[in-house]
Image 1 (cartoon, one colour):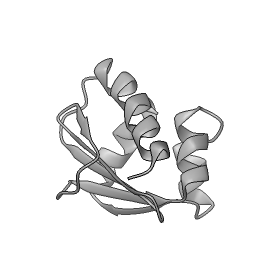
Image 2 (spheres, one colour):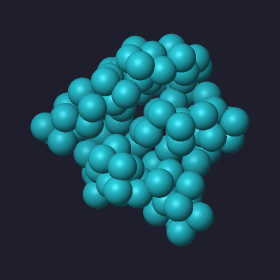
Image 3 (cartoon, helix red, strand yellow):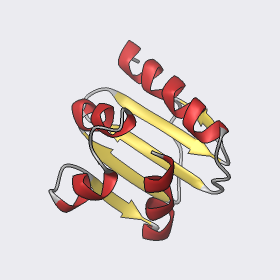
Image 4 (cartoon, helix red, strand yellow):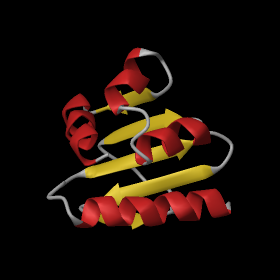
Length: 95
């Protein structure tokens, strides 16, 4: 596991702590690892999720820092979404 994944997981903990997101989402960071959010709890372990979002580390970093909207990332093909699109849409408000 990379320090980048650990840093991203910590940033997500802060974002999800202030949200009412229920359900689960897995962020697959290409070549780095995964971050799993289940009912607001963030971990770096793998598991099943309602929606899986895959992208490069740079793309996730830009989204988490607010430099790239999740909608723009999806529309330009920078992220791939598999699963519940409704859950993915809710995430755009958190990120």
